[in-house]
Amino acid sequence: MKRKCDVLVVGAGPGGSSAARHAAEAGADVLIIEKRQEIGSPVRCAEGVSRAWFEEIKVPVDKKWVAKEVDGAKLVSPSGSSFYVDEKMAGNEVGMVLERHLFDKAMAANAARAGAEIMLKTSATGVVKEGDKVVGVTASSYGEPLAIEAKIVIAADGFESQVARWAGLDTSLTQNDITTCFQYRLTGIDIEHMYTEFFIGSAAPGGYVWVFPKDEDTANVGLGILLSQLKKPGEVKGYLDKFIKDNERFTKGQPLEAVSGAVSVSHPLDETVMDGMMLVGDAARLIDPITGGGIAHACLSGMYAGKVAAKALEANDFSKEFFQEYETLWRNRLEDKLWRNWMAKEKLVTITDEQFDLVIETLAEAGVDKMSVYNILKVIKEELPDLVKDFEEFI
Amino acid sequence: MHCGACAGSCPKNAVFLNDTLPVFTDACNRCGRCVKVCPVGALEMEAKA
Image (cartoon, rainbow over all chains, first blue to last red; front, top):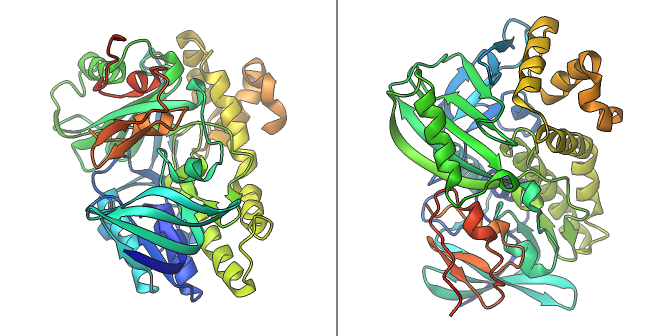
């Protein structure tokens, strides 16, 4: 089988659907292929996101895909001391925990409404190039081979992105830039349901434990650990089981779902475009290296890529040079933050539990009015300058 | 768990998920990173024949 389209989006996650929607809204003929049989399922995510993003990514918040809104965040030190950032009290936008299986479908439906076509159970199996230029992909659709010719390919195939690598972009990561994650949705636990909780320290070396409420007694309880900090295969699940066993608030909880995955926690790639192709979201390594959050960056980069794709069609120019506009858009918005948080993450690995205790105490005393990595780093720069002196110019 | 951690972390791009299970191609150089990254310990290295 063969087919053609203007814009082929590989992957119907939030980044891919966002790209598809914005390209289709501008009149492009868009096809999305998704390897799964159901968009948004299985969930591979802790589902936390800040409400502040949604205006920028042009998605009105819909209660249907919001599991829980929270008033703020709580950071817990290794010795158990904590500090709260109450966003609502400060008049800030609050955090949300999503229903990703519904959110992803809603995003895909937005793309479909704009005119994009969706094919499920269709996985890319290779990239077709003419010289240096990407001109389509080979795929397997419901088990049948399919060749898709496209003027522009948008790789939105997530952390395990094969498309970019097949096309020849170097997206390889070091062990220090990969975090491996495990999570249960635990029910029947004692949670502070108006806060997202973050536990830092040796419970999750190089990462953190999250408790993101889904309702009054159910939460996504998970952790991410830097690959370089792991010694044995399968160890990450062991860390989570130990955390739950050691914490009486969670010991009696029962799992409704187990989720695993890996995220990149790297600095940005040198290039996210080539002739005929753009990368978005996790595939472009746009995950925040400190928080591991990728949803908002995926939606934002997808929106930029979709709009640039539509312009490229108008100009009939699918060159890497034309796609520089996409590079510039996402870099202006995100690049400094990604570099800063990557450097903060590099430092985080070296911090002892005693130092983390001191950081939390210091934050509790000084106060932080808005929960963001930047605001926390600003306080640390003020109060504990030695900890951030390697990258203080970014704060 | 078919999470794709193995595929995404392979430095040689030698692993891909065929529906739910990882498939290893000839490009695999037995570096073992996929074994380590797998969150649930589902992969193991066979002794060299």
